[in-house]
Image (cartoon, rainbow, N blue to C red):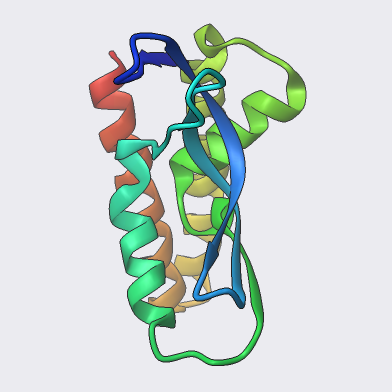
Length: 136
């Protein structure tokens, strides 16, 4: 995945660790990087989830590590693409696989009458369905 940088060169997407307040490490955040001018930019579809994480941690003073792919379904899919070394053309296939996984988990959560878990899975399905709609 690429986009043009303000310097005119191409930025590529990478999975990076974002450090917040020098003691909170958010791993596997999709970030566009320009090797020419070192400009970086968080991938816009994950910004709402990243903002939410940062707001939740605003008052925290303890050292923490967070796996962003557990919060953001888009980060989850991009990390899976990165780990399996598949190209972006495979992203729709990976998103469909993830939707199927989440639907299985959703059925389990409903059968256990776990309202909080059901709501969490609904939120994840909503994230990924939004991305699928913009990708197609």
